[in-house]
Structure formats: C-alpha cells, structure tokens
Image (cartoon, rainbow, N blue to C red; front, side, top):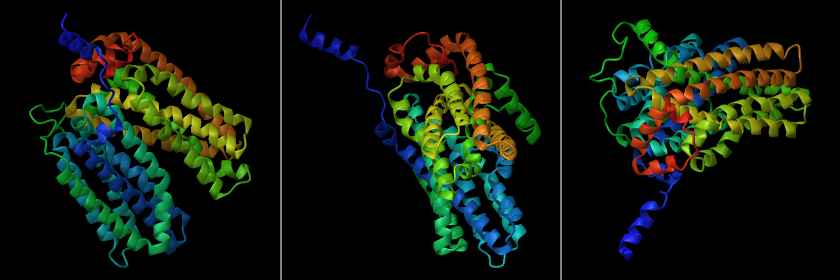
Length: 450
C-alpha cells in the first residue's frame, strides 16, 4: 500500500470536527436573525415596562397597570393561535419585516400627546399580538438558514439570548424610563423595530412561502378551521404530542420566579433578594447551554431529554427544607441548568413538523406554554397565600417531576417506532457529519423526531 493511500485512509477514518459557535456565527443570515431578535424582543420588553410605568404614574391604579402588563400574555395567545400560520402561507422574511414595521407604527402612535389610556392599552395589546407572528416566522426560518448539524447550537444561542433579555430587559427598561422618561423610551422602542426590519430585509435571503405549491390541510377554510388543522397535526402525532408536553413542563419549573417576591419576603429580603432569585431561575441554562449543545452529541442529547426534564422539576423539591437565600439561588440555578433539555426537544420538534406548517406548530406550542404558565402562576400565587412559598415550589417541583417521568417513559416507548427512519433521515441531512451519529452509543432511539 502506498504512502499516499495510507494518508488518504487516515484522513477518511478521522472523525469530523464538531460544529462550534464560531461556525454558527459565521453564517451571515444567522447573525442578522440574532441581531433582529435582540432588537425585537428587547423592544417588546421596553414598551411593556415603559407603558406600564406611564399608566401607573398617570392613574396610580394598580389594576390598570396590571391590565397593561397583561399585554405580555393575553394578546400573545390570540396572535399565536390565529396569526402564526401566516408565516407558513407567506414568505417568512416578508412576514418578519411587515410585523416589525407594523409594531413600529403602533408604538409611534403611542407618542401622540394626550393619548387616552384605553387607547394606549389597546395599542400595546396590538403590538404584542404581532409578536407571535414574528416569533413563528423566526423559529421556522432558522432551520432554512442553519444546517442540521448546527441547528442545536443556533437554537441554544437564541434561547440563551432571550433568557438574558428577560433578566436584563425589565431592569434596563425601568432604568431607561427613570432617566429619559416613558415617551423617549417608547421612541427608542419604535426605533428598535425599524432597525430590526432593516436587518431582516437586507440580512436574510428571499425565500418563497413554505406552503407555496402545497396547500396546508385546513388552509383557506377560515381561522378556526385552520387552527383545528394545526392542532390535529401537532397532537395527532405521538412523538409531537410527547415533545410539546415535555416542553410545557416549564409551567412547573418556572414557578419560583412567579413567587420570588413572597419567597424573598419570608427570608427577610426585599426587592433586591427577589431580583436575585429571579435571575437564578434563568441563568443556569445560559451557563450549561454551550457545553450541552457543543460537546454532547445529538443522539445523546435526545436520550437525556426525559431524565433531564425530571431533574429540572425534582431539584425544586429541596425548597421544602426552607433554605437560605444563597442555597435557594443555588437550587434554582441547578434546576434551570437542566432546562437545556428544551434545546433537544426544540430540535426534534422542528425536524418532525412539515416545513409548510412549522410556524403554526411553534405558535401552538408557545400559546399552550403561556396558558399553562398563566394558570400555574395564578394557582401558585393563591397557594402562597395560605402556605409558605417554599412549600408551593416544592409541591410544584414534585408534581412536575411525576408528570415528567410519565412523559419520559412514553417518549422511550415511542422511540423504537420512529428511531430507524429518523436515523436514516439524520444521516442524509448531516452528510459527512453523519459519522458523528455513528459514534453515538446505541440504541438510536430519541432521534426519531428529527
């Protein structure tokens, strides 16, 4: 055998390099998408905080302030259910640009002097109703922009960025309103949407509508019929149903942030302590995400998804011991670290949903999550009136762990049915990188949803 032949065989047998975050950010379209998310999501948080403060300053009414803050939930649910499917029926880049321009115009109208309060609240609700349309288009188009072997890194980056925006958005919004006033803050919000629209328009390639040439089932039959068709798609598939229920476990493990204020009060702390507790419920996954997405192979991530979902909830049971502030932060941080399983669920979900229904599927998933969190937070708040918040968190963690265990077992039973087909699909998508899949431990079970 010649030396050249030996060298070529050595090169062929060496495992390919795993994708890195540098590889993801080397994709020009992803950089544009990431920047637009920062501006769009940041603008949303800024508008919500600024207008809530403005309404409270003008009325001193906690009820009206709460009604304004509810814009972050109720209109989002309506938009997610009835508008997200538009991102499948029209080109997704155009959808993102139009929604940004529409929100810029709506926020600009808020700047009209002496605008009635009810009009301000209605405008804020309209701004938020457009958000799930933008989110659905962005979530769906990621898979068109990023190759499959880099998708988990891209999704993890966007997820971590959003968590950071949640932690920093309220504080930054409050500080900006304090320094420059609510009207200037709203002006900055309108500007953020304008810049986001420009980034999307000139940073992303034009693509035809995903549903072009393949009319989705239920399309054209009215919004209710279209919603019913999307619901049948998501919940009629065993794997998709398990994935979406696993994702909705967030309703249980996010409860510490909902009762952070009374929890801190029981520990003798104030707003600063509550802020630290809320931050600890978001940062763990940001820290763990780089290792989970870069160092752990795709099949291993999917195999660990169920057990990690259980750990996310069961760790919260430790709150029953009524630990100190520092220990409580460590518990919440550890629980949030395990939430990186959501990246595996997201990856499996996006690969199993047909591209022509992808945005609507994400809209339904987000709507259900927000409804579940709203109900869970309300129940947790009511329970915290009669029992210590630490007990509420422990009970939520225990209940969530039981449900997560059931879903994890169901997920394992689904695996043999779809695992072989998905493994072949994964190998075709990855091409040369499929060697990474072959190096993963058998059985190839959780990759079925890819």
